[in-house]
Image (cartoon, rainbow, N blue to C red; front, side):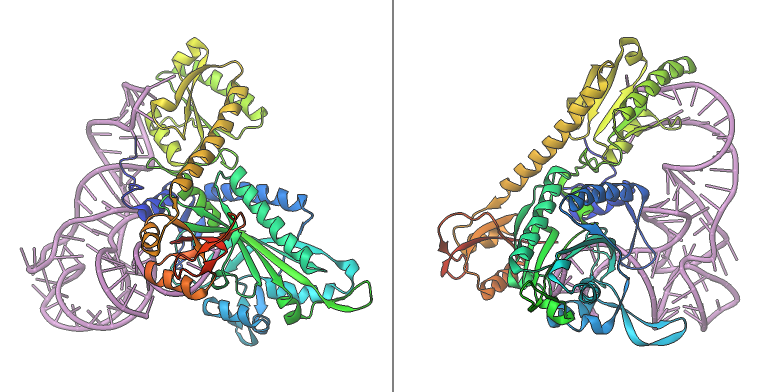
Length: 479
RNA sequence: CGGGGCGUAGCGCAGACCGGUAGCGCACCGCGUUUGGGACGCGGGGGUCGGCGGUUCAAGUCCGCCCGCCCCGACCA
């Protein structure tokens, strides 16, 4: 079964994606090029993502704060690689209140600099460390080519910024937060990500080492779904963040930063959606269960609605996010399609037959058509739907993982790598030479996605130059 | 910034080649019949045709300039 009006996922993935975002009412185009409005349904999804992450941040000892949107231009210039990386995409304010500003203000593209400045004021002693602050906010990057959620001029995200006394501690923090992201992606969003290290050419501007969670989208392209950076002392030196250690020696701190954005909504759409529309993982879905009453006259209506009200109350009290769709101006069939487009994981249909039999119809979004439909007793419904939502969540992760693994191949030679990355990921030995990486990019548009943390034993020959290689890496075309 | 496409009602489009005072589908409003997989009938409301200028008795249509958006490439979470 598929939506006759929706572009096909297989034939035109890009168009399919755009239509889902608009029709499921996640977002809409704004009047400014490259900007979007996040609609209530999309924002509700983001709020659930925020909660799932924020809980994990708090559990790992972090606190939230808010730093300014405007950053003095000179701050950006203090870290060489950072300014080189970001200057092409800065939005800069030169006039305020009708007056030309003494110093232009940058609309933050990320906040390492202004936070570094503040940390230098706050951190004086080893007793002040570590500083573990996160902020939820928005940033602006003037991208050439934009796409709803994946790359917009303004986007919403969280950015964590931490300062530590030792390199080891900062490196641990970097990996701790990468684990938090991976745990969130896998267990909340059912997006099976791969944790790894970015190559030199792909790392964050100003980082010593960038780590990433990489996900495979439904068109087999890769998406960087979250990053965690070890910044070494680069920003500490640029902003003079120094403390006195326990030997009364002045030391620079070691910092990290890590971020995950509304882009992740794009990852969810492109991982799970089908030709019928969006499919949301139960743990993040703004509406987990939609109840569709079915009746054809007033007497049926009152009988049906009595059951609908009773069961929806029962389910809400059991902690589920439930919506009843009482619209009378559209038919049940229309509603089925409508909620399937919006990706609601579970639908409950209640009609005269169910009133009679004391049953309800359950329809799983992840299993389309009649196969996913079952009639179950009204008694014990909360337990049953709870189990079913868990099963849906698990099945979504299994399907996405199977799809990913099916589309990762190990090329025997360079020619095979070239073929594989046209429509999948290649997992291959790489000597680490940027020239080999650049050649692959030049000839195939595929980049190194990450050097996975989990490495096979032993060593091999670089897939490009045949020199000795001691690490395997994923090559793929990316968003 | 290069290549392509498009701008006409809220959305999707026709009308343009061949100039004559704007139409279709969906959505919306009203009434009635419908309702277990995208209902139907009848009646209705809604448009400075992206903007500016030019040609003409007359411009959605022809000419010029500008603006915007989407898609494809180089850059990126």
